Amino acid sequence: MASNKKLLVLPGDGIGPEVMREVRRVIDWMDRRRAVTFDLEEALVGGAAMDAQGVPITEETVAKAKSADAVLFGSVGGPKWDTLGFDKRPEIAILTLRRELGLFANLRPATVLDPLVDASTLKPDVVRGLDIMIVRESTGGIYFGEPRGIETLPDGSKRGVNTEVYTTAEIERVARVGFELARKRQNRLCSVEKANVMESGLLWRQTVAALGQREFPDVELSHMYADNCAMQLVRNPRQFDVIVTTNLFGDLLSDLASMLTGSLGMLPSATLGGLGADGRRHALYEPIHGSAPDIAGKGIANPMAQILSFAMLLRFSFDMNEDAALIERACTKVLASGLRTADIMQTGMARVSTQVMGEAVTRELDKIAA
Ligand code: NAD
Image (cartoon, rainbow, N blue to C red; front, top):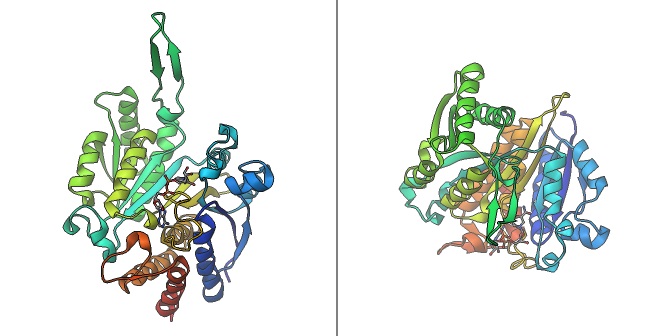
């Protein structure tokens, strides 16, 4: 019997709790059918925590996140809390967790499951079988660099400043995540920056190249300018395996790549920290979609992105690749059987609720594992 795995579950606001309920169904299934048990703790975050506890996330919840093996996050926010001051906004919950857990590598897969190949705005032939992973540096670069601000010049006009800044250590730690991921996939890493016009980009390129030679000579490394990468992602996205890039370029390119798949309700993500002295790595898993206030409470949200986030958690926090693949296969089979939530509805398919979709996933798990 495998040892217990400690998970902190933070459903959040809007559709967060609705889709998390379906993940709980999958976790219960795993408890029953696989040789693994999860110790689950649940806490409020975001607007829900603001209402009940007066802050977007309590110190107690942060402490629980630090002691957990992994955090499964839903989504936070909604119109009810939009007018609160910045320190009370629901988004503070996720920013606090990223900072306190030292989460610096954001992993966003862009995968096209066969039954949804027509959901992309690109031709099926271009995206069929697409399976790329974008690793975005998420705690440095221009969103955090100093100096920053808006200043008034002597002539009364204004000047806005932000600074793109990366140290060798920051580049190496995120590149290492990219190299390690590539080794577990097709062994190809593409590092993306603008070394032609930015010194920080040149340092990025030199540092990744040196790290590759030193520690990952077996991984096929290429370099690409970010503007070209945007074009290549639309022209021929399947040329990529793993992409590693800066905070700013990763923000844009990962959004672009997720739209290749055509559906927000299908896309998971992970944010990883460094390896601690005890060999543990903090990690948080969440769907890329938000709390979808427009459909919250209607029971129609697509739970797949949240369920697939749990599959990522199994793969990256616990090396449970077989179980992760099982869940991914079950999701694909449910879609192949013609069930669709409203966001991915196609003619000739059956439109179902969040709950029916979740139940269908566990039914497929039963069949596959039989
Ligand atoms: P959103 O992702 O919540 O919704 C965008 C659109 O996609 C909506 O029409 C929504 O109904 C639909 N959608 C999203 N997820 C879906 C799902 N699983 N199934 C079916 N349809 C789905 O983005 P938004 O509308 O820009 O933001 C809404 C709120 O969420 C805001 O308060 C925003 O700040 C917050 N937000 C939170 C996170 C997070 O918690 N990490 C991320 C993004 C946005």
